[in-house]
Amino acid sequence: MDESDLIFINGTVLTMDDEAPTANAVVVRNEEVVYVGETEAALAWKQKQTEVIDLAGKTLMPSFIESHIHPSIYGLTLLEVDCKPTATPSIAAITEKISEKAADIPEGKWILGWGWDDSKMVDKRNPTRWDLDQVAPNHPVVLKRTCAHMAVANSKALELSGISENTPNPEGGNIERDEQGRLTGLLQEKAQGLLKAPKYGPEDMAKGMKLAQEQFAAWGITTVHCMSTQTADLQLYQSLLEQDELNVRVRPWMWAIDQNGFDGSMEEVLTVGLRSGFGNDMLKIQGLKFMLDGSVGGKTAAFSEPYLSTQETGILYNTVEEVAPLMKRGIEAGLRIAIHAIGDRAIDVAINSYEQINETTPIKHMRNRIEHCIFPTTKQLRQMKEHELMAGSSIGFLYHIGDNYLAKLGEERMKHAFPHQSFKQAGVIAPGNSDLPVNDGNPWMGIYAAVTRKTANGQVTGSEEKITVWDALKAFTTDEAYSSFEEETLGIIKPGAKADLMVLSQNPLDIDTEQLLDMETEATYLAGKKIFSKSTTRKGGSIVQ
Image 1 (tube, helix red, strand yellow):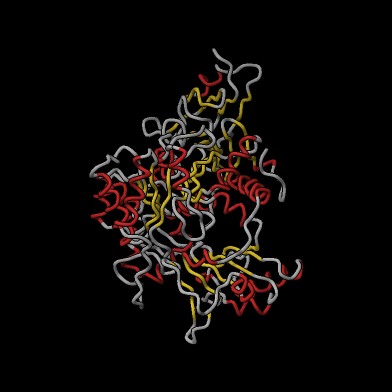
Image 2: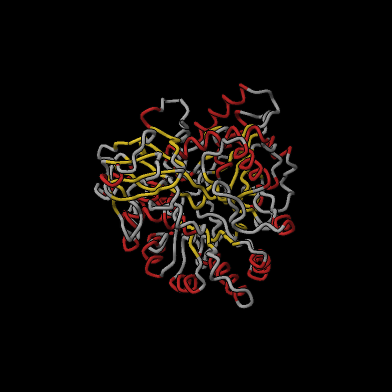
């Protein structure tokens, strides 16, 4: 018998394979799973150099895949002022942090921050340029909201960016003004692209990405779909791969057109002939990413009916006539499409665009996607199934910002948000995600929300859309792998699959659902190599082994 590298015994193995869901032992050789079954048979593979891992009753399962995050952006946020509600629960706390940062750097140097969320701060309002001016009048300051669809800038940043009361709103964006017509400092959607904050360099990006990878490993995540890949991002991932410092599989979706401050690369991608699937097991191109609407938090997601107590229905970036021809060019060139659509009005444009393309160019085999896809109607679900479209479901939103959604949309509409049971009944594959750094990237929070339909404040909405723990786990493993045509090798434990594995503190199928939030990763393996161990990681120390 061939020699083996690792043998896991004495635990519960959740394979995520519906045909053989559980086992007692797993054998890994040359980065792949070669045997799944019983302990005695597994130990027959043992050779002198084999490491036998006694799980001591713990649970082994495939490591997580994240279908929609922004890895390099998340890495850079780890270098910025932390304005998340856990760190800055009030505007006063934000300004205190900005004041401290301003005292540490020369006047005129930009201060960048990330993560404020008015819905979770005691003030229940957005920070303004005047708030920031009080503590940093001589430093340009830009703080992005957690949703990434809005940013607040102080007067110095607005001045250096050439933004004044006379600056017109860009198409698809809004420069907020108060009742007197004065700039508040808030820039929404495409208006953020007017800011002239300095770009990060390659060294900054590499530093941030290394920090991000450590957190991915601690969460048990070994594959991530980068949903806003630009030139610098792709260069970063390739550079880390060349240096043998890429410790997470990356699946890039190239940002298609200039939007929201991001530079589109569709023309260049088409010119060089890049196709979906190009790359290797660590770095593999997925396709093109488009964007149709904004966010619920900023009331810019596009709905048919207005937000509560308003006449606002959100911002629709493009019509079918505008976006469908662009999508079609990508599809005809062999590139899959992922298109951001949160509200039903945006989802309509996405589906109608796909339908129009399918009239002349078959798309059903491609596993094209609608990102977030939070509020599809019953009709839209049928249309998605008809064209074999996938829903990149941001189920993590329900836990993290579901309370804000309820306040802006109401209970009736929220009953049908993140409809995972309806996805299942309609036959629509819906891999889950957090949209990190928009929200915390811990997959267990999304799994918990899918199973309980509870928000962070304990509100329950749309109980009929609950799914089982098993199905929720599949949303972050096998369904995710299906999304990239890798269901035979990722997100599953069976012979021939990559040995991307994690050891859990408990069996998620055997605990009270409330305990899902407390699940911890004991160890994470990428291709059979241990990249995280809870027992050997010191606070403040490196996670990657």
